Image 1: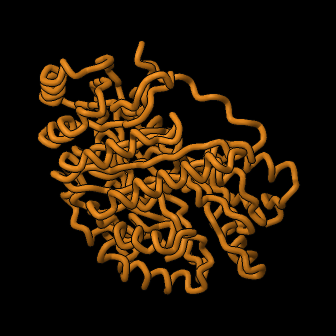
Image 2: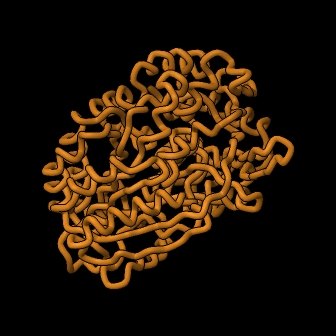
Length: 454
């Protein structure tokens, strides 16, 4: 491999890092960046990492804070290994490891198909491999439940591994779905799509006092509906914290259920409701707090040219069963009323339904009784040290105050630099699957070359 290797201080190195979405990852200083074109290039990179003692991290969509790290070798799959292909014969879609979710959805839309994915189009296959929670999760399951085949490079010997339900390769197929970043470098995923669906989206703003009612009502909805919430301060910054309900229905019966919720709680609506019809997931309104005056989400400011000046983030995630959050709203209320700034939010993504149709041992994702996925997001200006400490402490306090109620954790967000919390995160995320994952990691990456380690 003579090309595609970039070292610190080079123009290409700086350009590659500047394109990473995650502020912390963009501002890190990896020891080298490799942009492989083939699995042979990946094998060559593994040999280089072994000879230099570098850890390896993988960059797909660039949303993860773990896609780059100081002194590590970053495998940037996004440059060349990003193809998305429709297989008409088998009616499946094949995505390389550097593809993003939005490209998969655009490919599938040409064939009147889609998959159940998260709420944004820019994340990569790391999200798919570790869960994938979105508006269709209740009716169609996690994104990883749609995976039919995985191709990966094993770190220990550079071997190419192909596994599927028909050829599971022991625990490999089960555990790569949910724990792939700890086990191998995934180069290709095959997904089984579902028919494209027109979606009815209803958004409305409520006071925080309505959270309990909204959560309880949402848990009674048919699985064709999801009713998620975002808690925080609206963009204008002149309002107290509020709750945005983001309801999605995929069938006529589901739409009737949404209309029922709207009518039942009409007197409690502070702004909205705003209705829209989306031909597919890509066209849904942004899952963010809008302006109260018109329901529009302001355009995000352009990212600073200096990659070290990107906003910093700290994110925690927890999964909760039904009948839990509705009776614990005082914890949510207190957390939201003390947000450090208007960019900090707590999102409650509605799950349940089809997620529980898969047994916890069939994949590494153990939280199959989840009804709600909570995402606690703290954002701050990296130049303001005090603000950063305050925001990070707020996010950590939110996590620790709710942790005892959780039935699982979405391992996309994890904190290996906080060993006490990290070990609890691993147990929540993987449950009884954790010993199986550790055994496979010891077999496939015995020297812990991959940055993600157990």
